[in-house]
Length: 358
Image (cartoon, rainbow, N blue to C red; front, side, top):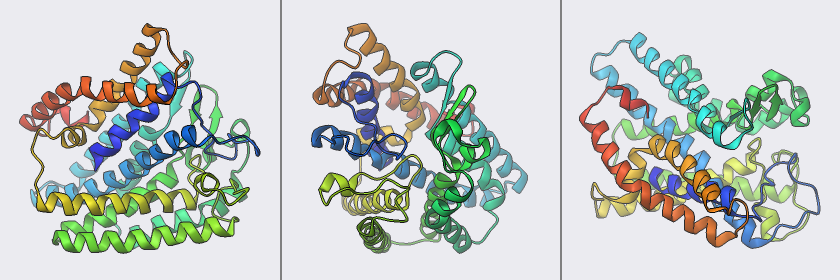
């Protein structure tokens, strides 16, 4: 599943480099009412909305699986906290790579790696709470975050208070553009942690599928209800008609309740299918999606310069179309696959080494 969303992510980043008509209208700050939403361009962007919430959710799942293993191995609470602190800090600092290629000199973009890294820091104290409390906290942030944001932090990115930009609403401050405020993504990580905890206690693929099916139905029902009412829960990015693109045109910056419910619901459906497929037919170690899923940070840090430099070298940056977005994403994935395969094996041969951070 993680490999699937990593490959899908490459489509969005390839579109950003090659696609002249790329749409980025996923916020009330980015969208002017009445702006056309051509279906081809809209859905090229929209399908990749699945990536960030799924990846953050699965990061929480991984934590819920790895922390108990460390405890059973006799690792101290301090050592686990130190690992979370170091890992979170390193992940956040890796934002320097996309910033170098996507921002003006001296400017830094804080997006998904910042969100994951800072959420890891929050998990140091939060992991001590009961799992139901963590899941409840995550649900509350997603449900009531818009109210808190409207009271304390809502405003154009260049007028957002610094603390609000770090935690609640995207904002620009000096050298930093904060695109992924921490708290909403922490909420998604907490939900993933709850899912991972249910697996860690021991279960069968059928029970996992049952949990995912119930979650998918509940989340998609929430999306339909809140989007249908077209009021609170949409982060001020409302439907202007009953067209499909209007229903799906939800706010990612910051994540609205409708965005989180829709993407996590769709993610649960896909993960339900993946669990069923893999439980019947195990995947080989060289499966491309498994290889990418084992080396997501390695792929992430390499595919950005690869796509950016390729577009510049070929003289086609922001000059092609949708086909180029998909074609160059596929080409980048093919090129990086053998490197990811090698790196994954290297990591497996050196557990608990510095390689674990990439």
